[in-house]
Figure 1 (cartoon, rainbow, N blue to C red):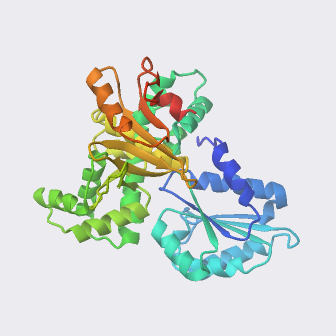
Figure 2: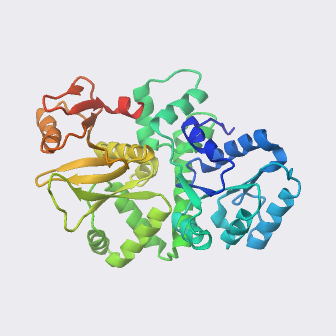
Figure 3: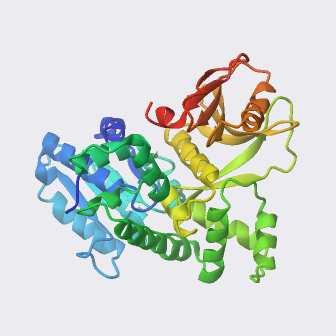
Length: 409
């Protein structure tokens, strides 16, 4: 049985956009919960303006034509609008709209209709943004939906389990299997179900959202690239270094091809690029970057759910949480040393963060604090760790915070 559990942070952020003129676009990796949020918005619209005025069309559903056309979509919407109360706002919700060729022409015409509120979702950024910006001149709002945060994960787990589970045990499972909401559709907690679900999501993203929409025919090379990037996420890369690795592994390729493939992966929201940026006077002439998967479950799928590389998994969780909280995030590069993340707000505020499994070892403690102590400005400096007994503030003002507490804040 599918469990419908509210995501109040998203719903509170999205509801004020009901009735606004701009087209609202929910973007994000496939199966991250966009469809469920769209259903929640449609329900709110039905309560406000009547059931017939909330038109929800899921374009990847079984009841859709095998080869839908823009003309078919327009007729489907028009038939629903004919039943709506013309004196009230009509709300049109189109789920996975990129499944219909030339969909953007329908949306452009729909936008000219009075008292019509338009929402769409999609799993490919470049298909959506390029088509929309070309045809409607930027009159749309993009709202990103991510897999569950750990805080949301606890809420979903609590809604399903009658017996409360330890937070640490739930975090271990979250770290291993990630935050795709669909894992809570299983009647019981099942590793086999979650692993099968993640495999299906991965294959759909690679074959549909990346290969098809990215015009990629060499699936073998694409999958080898994804596996390498995921398993080594947390390392600094250059496009050329990735191409050199793949060539040495028997798949000769070029930096240009790798760049195109990465562009397609980013467009499907399955991976994000975190670039180097100089701090405290350091200039980076040829910036490298780290690549973080959208979900640790998808990352760990590539390694057979091996418990190795815990530090990189923690980094992935922190990076995605920073993005979820609205930070622009980069890798901080000093004259000597590196800071895991520089999280910036539009206001100009920054936070410097280090992420480590443990600070129990004195050498690790000194290594993690040293780069932060080298930064001369007064912005907050934080070390996130699974430890608790060393939490507090150092003499130089660095805050040591338990990672789970930070995620649940």
